[in-house]
Image 1 (tube, rainbow, N blue to C red):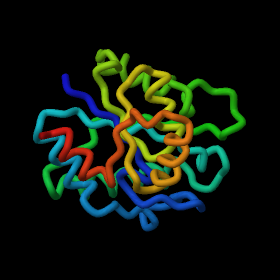
Image 2 (image 1 turned 135 degrees about the vertical axis):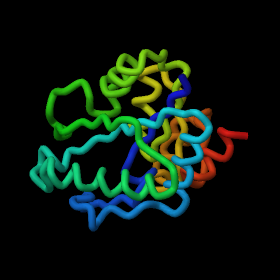
Image 3 (image 1 turned 90 degrees about the vertical axis):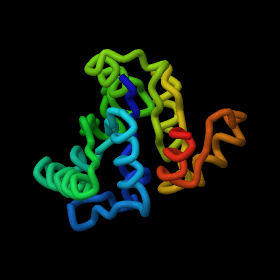
Length: 179
């Protein structure tokens, strides 16, 4: 099985410091939905792994979260794409959970669910916590410059972790992957 894991906010859709709290606020980044469809048509199982502390903070509820993913699913279906599973951490940054990135729990759960060794899995994110989660789970980290990616790239370069491939956006990362 070819499995790829994507962060959501900042990778698939535009992010906000005020959180994405509703389907109306959820707007895809140009080319991201087509990139997911291309992954699907190339035989990839596509999974989302996202920290969603807005749930713990009370900024939105599970119904709003579900509505966001229904919008994503509906938009992907129109172009022949799909998300195969959504894993998320509903906890806040001060909660003592194992699933909040950069901890590897969410990625480890994905590996178990799909029975795939994480060393063979690419995780595309836009933040230092995404990259560290991939490294902590022994997955292959890829950074995109959308969302928080430009800031993360500078931090990773200054920390001498520049071995992580960096792309302008999900579409360019997928193009490189499929070549």
